[in-house]
Image (cartoon, rainbow, N blue to C red):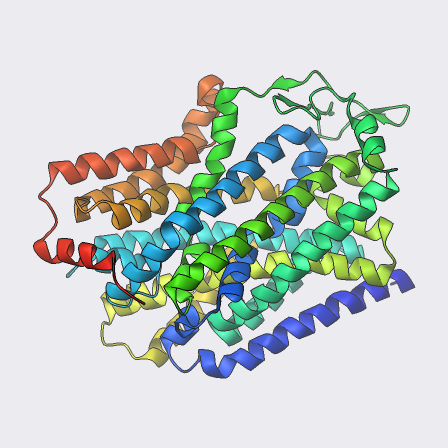
Length: 523
């Protein structure tokens, strides 16, 4: 290990020690009861709420997936995705946050998304909605955790020039350790720190990359002749060999003709924003803030953070194509996601580069801890205490939670064993799963009094199932069917909720009375 690598190691290790210390500091309070462990006792302030929500949302794909996408195929795909995400972020905080905070408290003091659904529709016996929602969380968060472990493995393998698999296991072990200790409170406090680290790293690397490439005009001059690379309505196509490696001619990367980026594709890409309405790691922050009126400030903080971070990630990818036009390290779709790492290592002193790369670690940790904790709560709080053993003590619930956390982490590790996984692709599938299965139901639960229990069950099943069906069987048909699975699955889930609700008996008077009370409930 050379001197430069040792300095990077010192910076990254120092950051890891700080985050573990936060876990230890929060461990005592987190373990007082399950409400503290899972939502921090509803005690978060507006800054922590906003920053932890966005940091847990914008995982390793923000610093690796988005720059890699922009580096590989240009402006359009990454830009329309970012626009959709920014719009979804703002609308989610504006429309959903306050009503969900009020209703989750009024409906049995719900502390998980499945529990809120179950309490909202007054499930009594077998609780199918609670069970199905919990299973959806387990499935899609295992995939999400896998994407984070992939990002961690790529990061450590690049830094230390060591094999991917052992480096991925080191990163996974670290995340498991501090989530295991401190629960939601440790996660939220550390995510606040990590959100700050992420945005500083993104802005710093972008600034350094643009300056190194000769300034904004030089960057544009270098990439404007790539077919479709800087267009809103075109997609660049790198020329690759049979192994997916980009071809070069006299040191210049080769590209084919640009692909059109039409209206249907734009709508499909913008639909990323729909995912926010069903994203548990964000929705739980609405549960956890101490006062609902403070969500207004949180919305402003979250939207500004999101806009800066997404724009910086996008333009890092574009400027890096001018700075590293023919890098062998970035010559495949999967390795292009290392562009932030390559830029940090090339442009900064090793110690500073280590701090920049800690931004990736921050993104990975801030998301994977949320995924593991929410998945474990789905089993321990919702299935174990909600169905199997209703008189379970807090200690028993937290024991089952930690066992589940380890089990989900193991599944995530198995998914992450393939180092050629494209982070953006893995994340997009899990994002669609939550957006389509939970998003419509969250909206109808909050804003349509006529929504019934049967409609809720139909919506969750339809949305989740259609994500798989569209991705595996319909999308490969191409043409008009080659759209992001979230859009059709979300729409079909809405149809299922409305049609089934109208075909079944109206909700009970008790449910309707609580629905009206939630509109003015003060908390």
